[in-house]
Length: 626
Image (cartoon, rainbow, N blue to C red; front, side):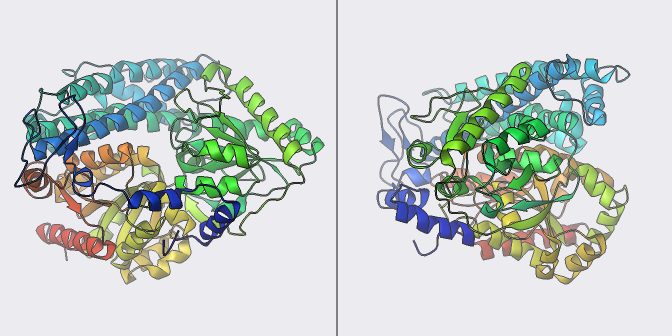
């Protein structure tokens, strides 16, 4: 491979992985490239769902599978099933938030209500008396979230009140106003059974309905619930990259997508008695480090100090991180712990512990599965394991790249309003006068499927800000931009003249760190409020969404939601749907006349950024903006 990563620290660690002779994500990807199924699988034209298969579609030769399904339905059905997996994991997270709220309200966890206003927003939405005390509200709001997750498809979700009326009417007209995620999941997956639904339009509508249920039934409640528990994000500085790891400390890494164990670990390790135990073992102290989306959830809400020291990076940095031989405990919650860790557990001096019943890595059998009522005892066990690991690791060689970068994180709807003086008016004024041409939500994973680790994401962000387009970044792609320095105020020098001026005046970077992939729901709230303030609907706004390096199933359901929301949605690498010619026409052209959204598939980031800029200028022209 000509280039491994956009980050020097990762490139250095790749050389160490090679020297250590251990399997790694880059070499495995390269090996798979030699045998990849390009004619069928990568286009969505293969099916293995029943015993009449496997079937393939060859346009012009074999137009249908054995059951009679065509290329368009075959590709869309597979995408719908991908989205069902994304919805399941988002909803699992939402359910954990609800249970944690209930247990906290009952006084059974070490957590407390940090932002009661968010609790009352949810209470108002769910029809609960806001005058009740925080503890009772936490219990009732938690139960309300669980009820709505399980609402019948015929019941309208309360959180749809965040949407614009224009969106509600559009979705109602299409028959895609959703009910609770659990039951919408049943319906969506039932569409996918052999000989049930072979209509690509019907399957696309089912996918949009499922995506709407995911955002309004799972993502928005879980983020507002986490704000209530751990605080609403506010801007502050956090350190990133592998260089934040100090081998002379006991190092605990909280990895995954949920913040519960990570937050409890930080609070416990700030206890002087815990620090004393680490020092008794010969360490300088004990530290907690965030990784992937667990890291993003934590850093949005927690100020760093000598205990909580920041975040390493996204999922492709996991193997390099472990190969530093400086991590004592790697706590894995419900997402993004690759099976390759089986090999790393045997090679490096790290104790691996699953803190979720979902996460099971071959050969790693230790579980301390998160349970709200038991979390105090659980983090004590994890701390003890980490200190014991340090005793064994002490004196062994480590290899940590000396790379560290600061970034401003913690932007939310509320903090953006605060930066603007409490109102959207300054932002709207800059958009109207052209200082900011438009806004793009960068909601992305990271992958090797369309270039070196994080490079396409960084390229896209640089191209957009150079065109005076403000970027709000979320997901693993957020870490790419944080480590690359684009979430620091100095990055304004890469912005166009209008955006550079605004960033200088407000003291903000041109890329606003907006959180995790679950913050897609939070972003939809902001976009809806902008549309309401301008007295237009969302498809009229000079905005777009880009996923320059999407990877997995959470990303695909977010993309389908953006299409239903009415937004131009760029994705790369090329998704396995392009073999369906009518399906691609529906998503990339016809949908613009239905929901207002359209799909842009483009692997060249320069071309994609130009297409996004042209789209934004077209929307500006339609609004009569200069």
